[in-house]
Image 1: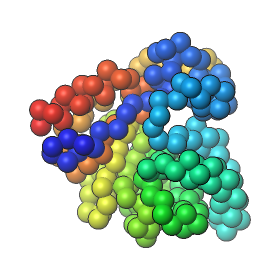
Image 2: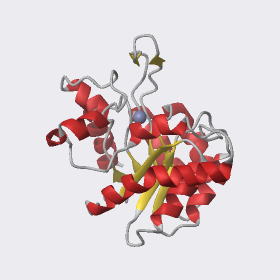
Image 3: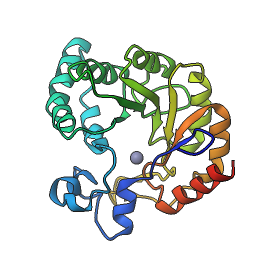
Length: 234
Ligand SMILES: [Zn+2]
């Protein structure tokens, strides 16, 4: 934490792994494959099941009750495994829908001493990836005292500020860690090199009320270093 109360989190794990010669995008687990196969390289931070969420999110379609139950059943053993490792804080990240957030928050009650942050993936400046209003999705999180920070991750950096303005009155810390805005090339199964640095956006994020800041896919350690410098100077 810096002296102005802003918490700096890190950048994209997959991005850092690729910079170090690991191949990520040809595996369904993405960076998760190295957490499974080569945990020695794990940079010792949040329990990151981000990439598992991406495939899981595609299952959210029909009956909401059945889906909520399925989601809880799917997440339960993973959450139990993470809680056994006694993390300081769990990252529920890249959550595509309110229904999945509700399932996770409900499951978290089974571990009453565990705290988490929850960040949504959004498709535009006002809706979750699944299409619910971001205000409704965030309100779901406010029902749980165990969720200590709420926000968005892995969204284009240009979406962050208008989203934060919509949720700036919540009584929790707002957390954001956007991606670098690289578009996905389905054919090559990799990101196009068409993104941008998130660093120039950071001061506006802070003005909008963000308290925890970091980066997701495509945000490298150098960008995080530059953000740290900005926070020190702020
Ligand atoms: Zn990401």
